Structure formats: C-alpha cells, structure tokens
Length: 251
Image 1 (cartoon, rainbow, N blue to C red):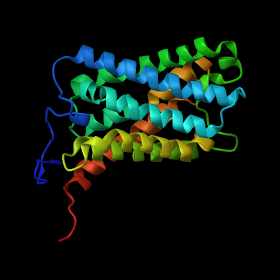
Image 2: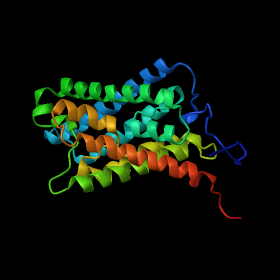
Image 3: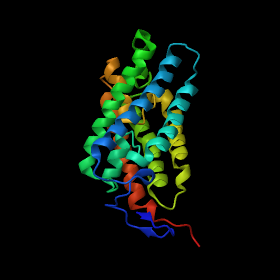
Image 4: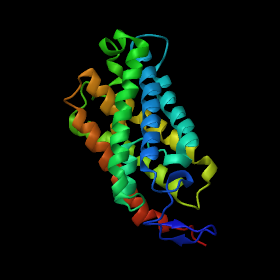
C-alpha cells in the first residue's frame, strides 16, 4: 500500500513507481548497470575503511560505520531516480516479494549487485595492496569469536529488517517526505552496522558480503550473509505492505 498526493492510502502493487520516485520501465540493462556501479562504489568505500581500520592506518571502527552510511546517502541521492538505488539484493527481493518491483527484473538487479560487490572488493584490493587481503581480509564479514552461526544469522536478519523497513517506508510511500529519504536510508544502514559490526561484521547486504568474502576466501560463512539479510528484507517488506502501510494516526 502507498498513498495518493492527498495522503489517502491506495494500492501500489503493480505500480510503475519505484524507490525515490524512479519509474519501473523497460530500460533494464541501463538500470542494472546503475545498480552495478552503485553497489561497487558502496562496497569499495566501506571495505576500504574497514581495511584501513584493520591495518592500523588511523581509522577507528566508527569510520567504517560512517563510510557505509554516508556513501549510501550520496548514492541514493545520485542514483535513486535512475534505478531506485537498491544496491542490495535484500532490498530488491523484498520489493519483489511485496509486489513493488517486477520479478522479471529482480534477477538482473541481483546479478548486477553481486557483481558490483566483487568489483568493489577488487578496487579495495588494488588501492590498498597485498595487505588489504593478507591483513584486512578485504573487509570480509565473519562472525566474531564466540558468536554462534545461529546468533549471527539472527543479528543479520534483524538489522537488514530495519534497513529494508526504512527503505520501503520512506522511498515508496507518497506520504513520506521524499527529500529526506536518502538520509533516512543511510542512517538506517549506519544504525544496523553499529549493532551488527561487533558481532557479525555488519554486512546488512548480501552483495556487500559476497565480494569481500569470496575474494578473501571466507567461504564457510558466506551462506549466512546471503540468506539472513534476504529473509530479513522480505519480512520487512511484507510487514510494511500488509500491515503498516495502511496505518493512520488516530483522530
């Protein structure tokens, strides 16, 4: 559900409107290319900060949170009107599951995002050299010592639930203030990494985990970072679509 310009709820399933006012049209290749570029840049900036922090180049863990959050704000403002700036398979699949994005395009978006994650990690490796992989693990996400895979799964599910719920609420519902949407989404990502960073590395995005974990050889936990965020994103999208979108303040 969304709204009309007057704030009256309306059914938006099957609508041609995407995130941040983008139009769901026929130029899938160009939109997918935008998703590839956006995801690559997000992963490059964020994992570069993570590598700098891990290799004692003057960055604290807070810099990693800010790098991901601020970059997502910039990318959503820059590319939101082009492709919707999902830059996250959990967002794309959540939108598709709730009828807000066509399934026929979801596969292309997800493939572009995963490829972007690989290229972003490669760019970090190229910029920081051999130490980026040997010491910094390319910012790969793995459960921290003492954190079970079950707990890590729950953490990634919950923080991605938060992110996708905010994305759908502020970037698809006409009642929300559109100009603030990129900032809200970037802050939601930062909040999720604040929570998950010490426990799981804070992927909050299958593509963000896919590239660094693949290139760093951290393959054992990769399934967790692909499945848990996706499930969290789908649950958030369905909750907003089926329950929260039709809510109104009491008179």
